[in-house]
Amino acid sequence: MQANAVKKLLNLNADTTAGSGGWGEQWKLLIYDRFCRDVISPLINVAELRKQGITLHMLLDSEREEIPDVPCVYFVTPTAANVARIAKDCAARLYTSVHLNFASPLPRPLLEELAKTSVAADAVSAITKVWDQALDYVCLEPRLFTLNQPDSYVAFNDPAASEAALAAWTSRIVQGLFSALATLGVLPIIRAPKGGAAEHIATRLHEMLRAHTQGRSSLFASGTASSSSSASASSHDSFARPVLVLLQRDHDLVTAVHHTATYQALVDDLLSLKMNRVTFEAEEGGRSVRKSYDLDPANDAFYAAYGGREFPAAIEANAEQLAGVAQREAAIRAGGAQGAAGLGGAAAAGGGGGGGAGGGGGQGDIMAAVTSLPALLEKKKMLEQHTAILQGTMDLVMAREVPTLHEVCESMVRTSYADKAKLLEVLAGPGTLRDKVRVLVVAYVATEGLAAADMEELEAAVGAALTASQPAPAPGPDGAPAAARAPIDLASVPEMKVLSYIKKYKQDAARMRLVKGEWRSGGDGRRRRRRRRRQHQQCAAATGALLAATTHAPPALRC
Image (cartoon, rainbow, N blue to C red; front, side, top):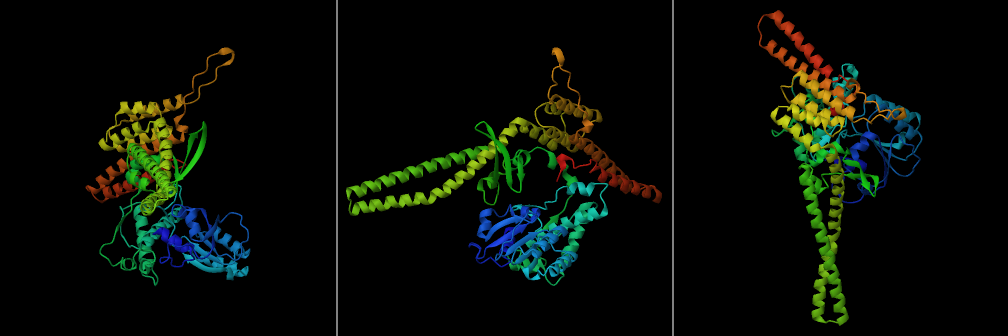
């Protein structure tokens, strides 16, 4: 649905439902900022942009020249810097007509500033339309979207964050959720646990939905965002309303850090995957080559079928399908060659009616082969792309022994028990420092029974492995033996700060639950209840502070 909304935007907000399969009737320019570029890139490739009539697309903050007689579509977020740059473009008369599309509603002060600047520059006539879109989120898959708000986890748990900063983060998240609901054309029942950011965001989202549906114009009643106008118009009156559950990341820290074994998760974990584009280094001809591929489940049948399957199953399926395609291609080419030879022989013999009948059948086989071959070659190209991605992923899987890490993490999550001997073995083996820290985070959060001495021993094992991985010191002068490697101060290693962060968080969370239980059990009068209430509030505040105990986001918990 978001793709349809973006295509409508690119076509000057004209309804393209009737002629969605044709080419754009008018050539246009597209100007976007970095956030809106991320919105478009997973949905529409360059070929599709050409089909929508976009001949040139550029970033808003890039240097651009005047291009007259062609309408320009702006798609940007409503910030003061973006509005100022748009006003500058209009004053310079870079484009004859400008269609402004903001990813979320343009605040009144910025709209007035744009109008004032345009009037002063005598550029009002260049601005054809101003549209408030509901598209400030990124749709990566048909059933997966992200608000694309990095470091939001740290912002909501940073004890030094100001009220204004928290309010700004909350507004962005609420607006993003509202846009996703508006695109779907649904009014959900919202549920969130009491206390914390999730409840606050749920309340703000409810207020925004209520205010919007009570207005004169509503995205939920227009039917423009939904695939069915009647369904969209009656979504808020229907008894079959969906349920939107908002949870904080703290409810399940393990899922964010533990090692997995599925194809899609390993690609995201080991390779560089951003906005459905994977980039990695591969060896070709004895040199390193940088490769990039697009992974889109909506248009990639193999990725849609095997992205959620375990990695070995994806490798086996890729090999089988590639062999089947190669066999079928060889059969088609052989059949076409035989048919062409048969037709040539019939023509040389000057065959009459019987030869004509046989020739017609051979020609039909050739045409069928020619028709099916392009689709087969396209499938082969897609499978070869996955072969390269699977190989790049496998190289890192073997180098870092990811199957062992996955087995250990999965066992701890499933049994809530940590085998210290196995953990020590894993921490002394291959793998990056971050891999080992992630294993310890799962051990601390998902299991019970690890004593403080055990934790110190496990951290010491990580320090020893880190020290051993450092380059050996150079030999001394006159052949003197090299000095021993100096032990590394773990307190200075950023990744190790995650462990102290997790331990303190777990201790304070347990303490908060204990105090909360004692307070609820009642007991000794009003004074005791007030004291327990204050302790409960202090523990809650301490827990929030510990979630941002480090200066930067814990690397394994970065959102």
